[in-house]
Image (tube, rainbow, N blue to C red; front, side, top):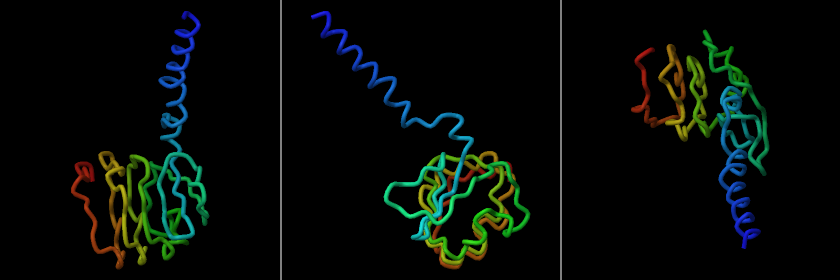
Length: 148
């Protein structure tokens, strides 16, 4: 009986403590944000640079959440702007500027999980979606623009 109870306790420990560590984002992961562009035109913002299994990566960009770009050519994914069709904020990110991020992404049609874009500390959103002629709807009602 004692062995059985110890076995159950060990199993509970693994389930409650060790297993979640593999899926829980750490502070270090949150500091390492990447934008992964897949061959279907989806640009995914996420913690870490591990691509989704079974998808073909076109490019991976480290995202500096403190960068304040002064024009669109400086944005890391600038050369692929016309390839971007979908933006997905898979994980919660908190930049200080989103200026020019998607300007001239003329084929951008949808933005998923935009609630994961925490704008509380953003001071500049200039031209963020300028000239996104294929983007016909976008709900930014949750954006906190107090510091913009």
